[in-house]
Image (cartoon, rainbow, N blue to C red; front, side, top):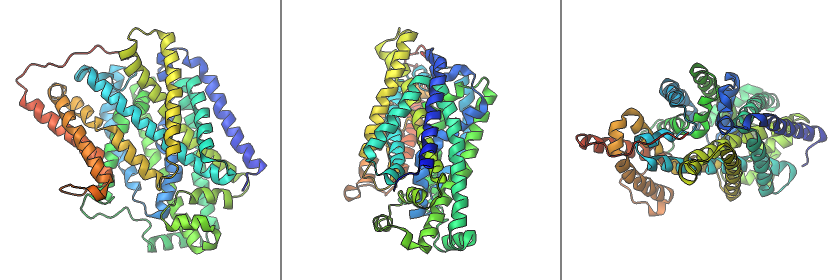
Length: 505
């Protein structure tokens, strides 16, 4: 199947606008700090849509419908935890980061624990972004592969290169303004798709809700106690942990807190982005549920190969197929552009955050402490390209993964390395953390590795209780906090030995 001229023009126009915005923002990237913060003068609405766009990505646009099609609405519990995390972030994290005014989200860890903590957190963050970029690019390549027949690997490479180009040229200003446009496009695309499914499904909305309820498609995963299945409670705990990590210590988000003129505007941006994601993620899940009913009532519309994937529990390809097979001319192009928007929004934010982290926490902290502005700009450009290359490599490796959403959640949980525990311990009690944080990490990392090995390889599992992989980052965070706090209390009579660091932003 090939794209019509109209659809192709829609997609090409979107890509041209995105690249143009990046180039026009180039003048804002002449200073290293301005490259990462936009000079603290960006409007609230743009920052809010940027935060929302970073959350959505093609992980939501493709994988959430795929999950709802294959199973139920269990993934929505992750979204339900976001307002709780947003409250904590706006109440504590945003004022804190605005007060210390450091470009790096991990600069303050050095003040509390010493240089090792800053380097550890930065490395964990960079690994997490490699996993995120890879998952996002892979999920973008699926619909384009079905539409054009191009090799998935070439689609990944081309998209990664284009996104890296405008991100490297325009810095955070390009990221935020393109995110704002992309967010409007993907919200419109999701809403339009819901309406078209209502119209095209035999029996209309009433039939969709009837069949979906009959098949328990709106289930949130069950409320039974237990740790081995992705129940409501397991996903809620996981979601709260990951969302606190995103809004509390993720460079991609923390960096945005400094892009507005005032603290009030920064807090408002977080709330708007978080509350907007809640209904939009519901839209994506509903699309998957409606597609389940649509093809259940009309199974002859699915080609044999895709029907075999569906029977095997692989639902990620159904929504892209619907877009290219059943939507009118022009609408298909808009939806493809929306998928592009979701992917490029997330990737550009991750690239800019990773570049800022690498230059501030590794290059300037270790390799060249006296680097000037010109050197920092070159380092930022180089780091942007480097992480784009690494992320596209991960995307290629994901081609044969059954559920890209599960893969992303699992990889992000592993690479995060429980650094949220280190941050929360230091945030709540710096004096106790200074004494016990390192010991907590020493015990927390082996716990993470042990849980990862046995949770992902059931045939070799040897554990007192069986836990779902989603709980691995929760366990790492809890272990570090509890052991670090206990050791800090135990040695509270001892003088502080951790070095006091000089902030390097």
